[in-house]
Image 1 (cartoon, one colour):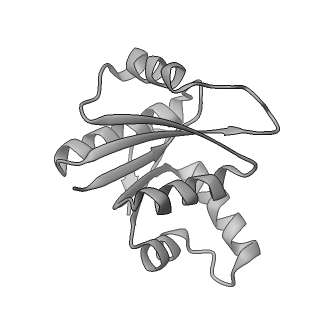
Image 2 (image 1 turned 90 degrees about the vertical axis):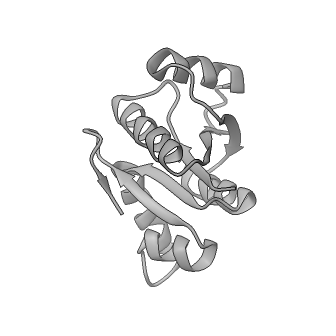
Length: 139
């Protein structure tokens, strides 16, 4: 079974809403399950629940078939997202273009090559699709 993971902010920003909408479209197109992921940072201690996340998503986009809602806690958003992608053996990750820039900075600190897409494809065997705030995609 194909799995698409989409990390989003809570509450949903305009960019997160566009990214989520595109991820839902991709999941439907590929007959895939969708994991909607929010990283609740330890240092912010907001205690966002899965029910909160689901209500927020459904208030913006309505019910999404085969969607699973996950809230993970972590210190670094990018690292926690990569852990979820690896743990779930995701096939596709749909991220906002702003998030892609943050991933590049983090990976640049850790490795010589900051190419997030290449890293995820080679290390996690995962396709990365970035979405602009206007909903335009790039692979």
